[in-house]
Image 1 (tube, rainbow, N blue to C red):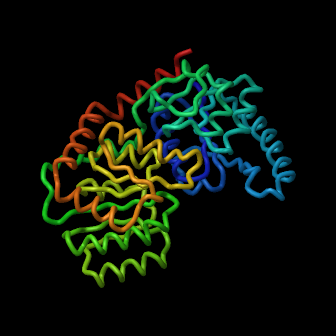
Image 2: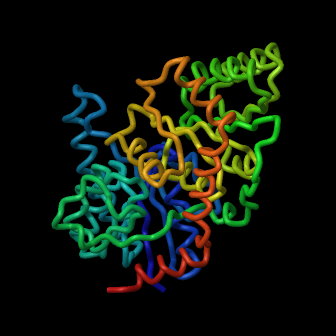
Image 3: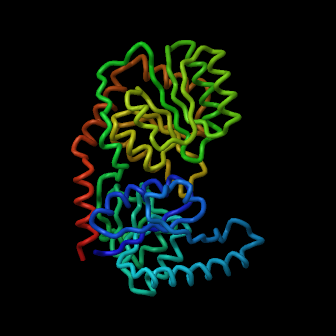
Length: 357
């Protein structure tokens, strides 16, 4: 049985797609994950994972010389780890922590694949391209990829967590009097969502009967928001980061969300139309390109945070709920986009890609 190493780390945006990749491969290969300390908080003990912490060289200009030394030491640690475990394949999912392992794999002539769940190639994966045999991604028009590497692209459908495929899809054909809104700020939370979006929800409640399911990662903000929603008589449920979130939200009408690769793929699969507000400080602006992928298919609304004000955002939400044609057009497009997707189909295609020369 071939041994595969998946490299991942950092935020949930990197780690969660890597876990879906792991689950898709574990029945046919011996799979391991290497992550950093930040990424480990998203991985439970059911996964076979190890820690190799890699410094972010540019995180502090004064510490660049020190971090460079640590970085080169991490290449040595990676080489030793790979040699002890005798891996056949390395799959880089990006993030700076994947670079030492990719370099060590190249030196050891271990086959390297790049897995890019975003619609723009990340910087770490771009550095790995010259060593990589294949680029596995969701978007044929992957941004920032040099033309000479286009022939390495192999398309698959978005890899979702297995349990998502077991959920009942949202097939509601009418909007009820009470509009249910899901608000997701991302695995790292989002103060903009806690403050501005919540303020807009209160304003919207003056014209619409609404129920809110909202991610609020900061405990103090959660308490303040709870009191505010109670005061304004808004039906609500607040939660911290929850990887089982969408089982609660499958019958919600609309999501207001950041646009990490996993969350927009899962909302799309469950046929929940969404308003995407990309995180403006995401590396390579990847959240914009993820949302734009769905916008071009007329499956979502996309609005940049810098362009939002009270009037245009409230008008957008009121228009969505009062003029149903556009809403159901987007919902029907989501249904068509994902109707053929299954766990087994994705798993078979991915296994074939890995086994091919």
